[in-house]
Image: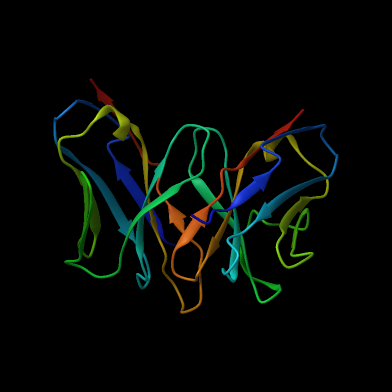
Length: 111
Length: 112
């Protein structure tokens, strides 16, 4: 069964460093998303991406964040200068377009 | 602003004890209500989607129902492996908008 994959599973970084989180969406999906979940809190929408451009973004997704589809299979989230409050689980999702399927997540820890 | 509230926050049942989880929502133009299951440290796993009031979906011991203001996830004769956090999410707004707005989840524990 096709699934969304994410790497790494856990990333530890120092405050102010850049991180790139990677995702491989389900192959025939055209819509891609990033969500995050701070420990003990709700899953929050960050950004959606379609046809090689951002289609929607939340207030959380400020200039420190960017997304890219560098090739036909990968979808990345870059955080330019990490802050302590960026520590969270980051989930990638893809959809067909109605049903969103989520990856296992990357746990980002900012020290 | 779209909002989702789930109750209870946590529910502990004995194996075989049926119950229901509630999801109340406010959304401008509902274009789908979604139920996901989330195990600790994992991503949400899709269960059901409902689009209009009166609709029902079933899968094994789970049944989801929808009204104009809330959805219920009924669990019948649960087993310990049904223990998880159950998330409700809505998609609304203008045609083409895709974001899901999630509730905080109900943490379900089934004791053997």
